[in-house]
Length: 93
Image (tube, rainbow, N blue to C red; front, top):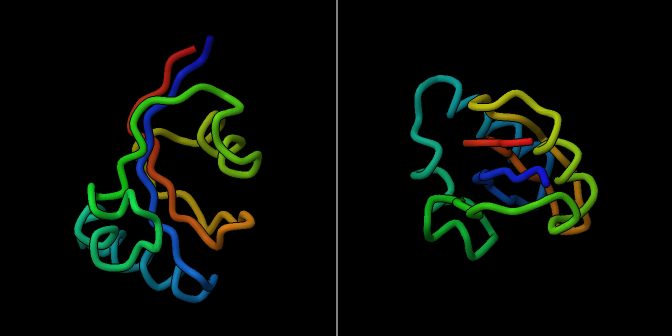
C-alpha cells in the first residue's frame, strides 16, 4: 500500500495561494508561512499532515500527493476547503 507524508498551507483564495508560493520559492520558510497563514489546524505544526494512504484525503489533494514531485511546492490545488500549497515530504509505493 502506498503511503505519503506531506505538509500544506490552506488559504481562501487562489491569489493568496499564488502569493505565498512565490514567497516560499523566494526563500521564505514553508512551516513559518503555514503557521502564519494556513486556515487548517495543521498550520500550528507547520502544515504537517503526517503519513497517510490513498483515499484518506480529498480526491484533488490525493491526486497531487501521490503523483507530484517530492520536495517541490505544488499548487494552488483547489478542494472544497479552499486552495492548498502542498509539499510532499516522503512517499513510498
